[in-house]
Amino acid sequence: MTPMDLVPSWYAPSFTAIWKCPAPSKVNAFAWQLLHDRIPTRQDLYRRRIIGGGGDTSCVLCGEVSESSAHLFIYCDVALKVWVGVFEWLDIPFSLPHNLFSILNHLIQTGGKKLRKGLCMIWNATVWSLWRRWNSVMFDNGRRDTADVLDEIKVLTWKWWLSQSEVAHSLLYEWRVQPKLCVENCLEFD
Image (tube, rainbow, N blue to C red; front, side, top):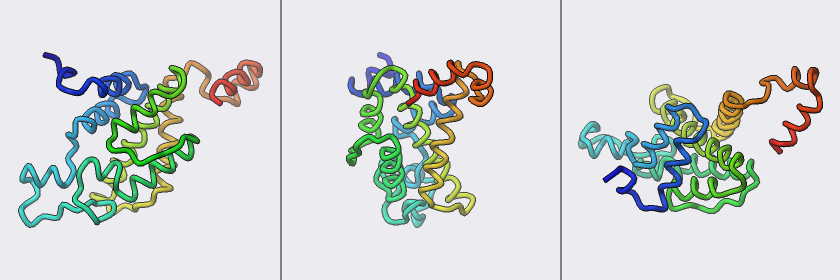
């Protein structure tokens, strides 16, 4: 019996997409752990008795509800605003999902192969940025600003895409050397 036999069949495409995603391997591994609900949220730490009996398990980002993976990455006010912002940026209709698989599956079933890979990378950048924000608030007294998270998602996605891209990394250089190629590549991304 393989690990894939333990998850429902409709989740398998999500795991395949994550491991084929051009995001850094540590981000892909984090996404895999997240989908398996193996992220050390405050509720999880309490359940494992790392946070004592009188410890606070409320969400670090909103402070309203006990912090589970589903709450932290979907239902928290901060996370929900981030997802709405990401879907507005992508110009894709957004409806409140029941889990992270439904968001990822919706994205990886959209468009052609290159677009699906890019959308999976955006999903990875979103959950990674939310996790980094959680760590910043938890350990560094960081801010809960969703605009900063959205900017980070866009920058991370752009960096990851360029790192695996076959086109020149400088569009200015490419424009000066081969203007026709630059126009073709720019149109390809639109």
